[in-house]
Image (cartoon, rainbow, N blue to C red; front, side, top):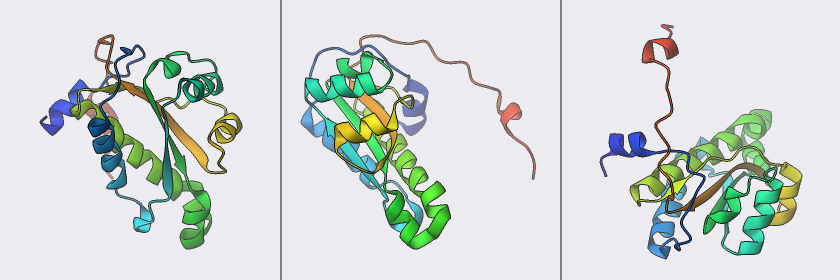
Length: 169
């Protein structure tokens, strides 16, 4: 798909078909996350793949009961490795760079999902400690992505005009 079309087609989808995500598509999505830029090329993040219904339901519960999370056949959780980044970049690495690394990887994955004909929704509302317990990790959760084939076509969200977002420096 043409890149600009990928950007224009992306929507936050909360209704998924029960159809499985092809493994080849999932691998391309994960590869997109792997090649995302990161501070100092540290790749201070991990991607957890939740396939089981039990884990998806637990993640939905940890996401303040957002049940659509469990309805997707795959849920990806992007976590920042704060310690790995802080070893090189001290406090700024822990406070910012690791979170940026995970966010950039998540964005690359989200766009790759669109290119694969799949849909997702960036879920940022969740209880950190519950997610850590579910994943059995101390890494900092940054985003939860349910991924699957869309069972809805949300309308395009209103965006500000470019002139509202720009400021000459």
